[in-house]
Image 1 (cartoon, rainbow, N blue to C red):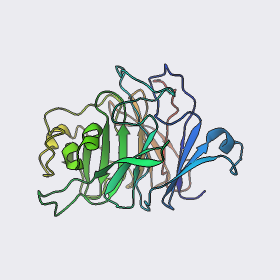
Image 2: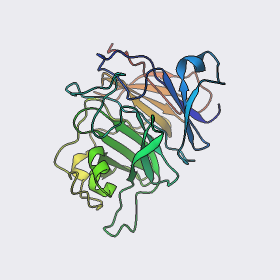
Image 3: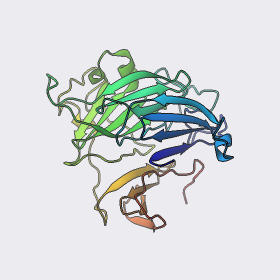
Image 4: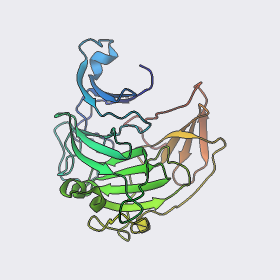
Length: 288
C-alpha cells in the first residue's frame, strides 16, 4: 500500500517495562493518505489474509504530513498497567493513538476500542486574542506513562509545544493544558522524538497557566546541543528504548545512527532508493 506508515506491534509480557505500547496485542496500525487509520490483525496481515484481517477503520480526515503515534516510555514507577502490558492512566485509554485530523492545526487522542476521539489539542496561539497560531502540526509524540502523560507537537512555524493530557481532558480549551513551548527553528519541524529519560522542568508554565502567549512557557524547553547533518532534509527520527541511541531517516535515502550522549555518527545505512519516512527499533533492543 503506497504512502502509508506501519506500526508493527509484537506480543509483550505484562512484566515488560522497557518498551510497551497501549495498543492491543497482535494489532497493526496503518495510516494512509486517504485520511484513515486501519487496524489489522497482525498475524492475518502477515499471512496475506487481507480479506478478513482488518479489525477496524478510523476516519481522521487528515490528508497532510503528520504521522500517527502510540504511547511510549512508561515510567518505572507507574502504578497501574493494562491487561495487555500497556500503561494505563486516568488520562489515557488503555488502547489509544494520537493522530492528526481534518483541521490541520489540531491533533486528537483516539480510543481504538470505541473508535472515537477522546480529546482534541489545538495549536498554541501567539497572541492573547488568538490572532495567530503556530500553523499546521507537522509531527507529534505521545508519552503515556507515569503520573503526567504528555503530548508533544511540532508545528509549521518551527515551534515545539508540550501539553498535559489530564489537563486537556478536563479543560474546555487546550491552552490550559500547555506546559511548555519554544520556537526552535525558522522552518517547519518535520520530525521529533523524546528520549525516554527526559523530563520537562517545572520552571516554565503549568497546566493552569498556558495562556497562549509565545514566551509564557519557554523555560521548560532548552536547546542542549546542535549539530549539522551532511545533507538537508530529515523525515523521521526515533530514539531507542534504552535512551542511548537515536536514528534519523533522511530525504537522501540514508539512515544515520547517533549516540544521545555525543551526537557523532556511528553508522550510515545506504540501502534505500528514496526518502526514509519511518524508523522503529526492535522493542527488546539493548545497549551495546
